Length: 155
Image (cartoon, rainbow, N blue to C red; front, side, top):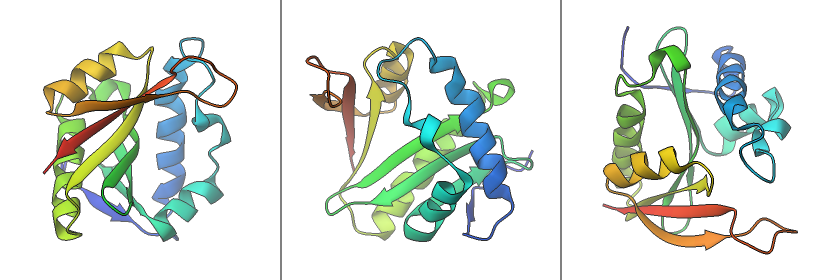
C-alpha cells in the first residue's frame, strides 16, 4: 500500500470514500459516547465544504485513513481522524499526525489541537503517547459535566 498522504480537493470522487470511512470507523462509538458523534450529521456536502475551506487528507487506495485539518488563529485543528479497522496498528494515524505537524509548520502555526470524547480512553492513551497534552475539558450544550478533552501538541 502506498503510504504517501494525498490531499483531496472539492471535486475529488474519493471524498465519498472518506465519508464512508468516517461513518464506518466512528460507528464503534455508538452507545459509548454522549451526546452522539457529530459524524451523524456529516454529509458528502459537508466533507466537500471541508475540502474547500480547510484540508482533507487520505492514505491508501482505496482510502484507509483520513484526517481533516482546519487552520485556526493559533493552531492547526485535527478532526475526523479515522483509520479503517483492518488497517489499524500499522502507523497510519501516526503518519497523518506527522503530516499535520508539517502542515502546521508550513502555515507557521505553533501547535496542533484536537478533541476526543471523555469515554474514549484508548484515544487518550494514543494521543498522549504521541506527545499531546490535555489542555481543557468541555461540555456539549445541555451537559453539566465534561464530554470532551482538548489536546495540544506544541511544535
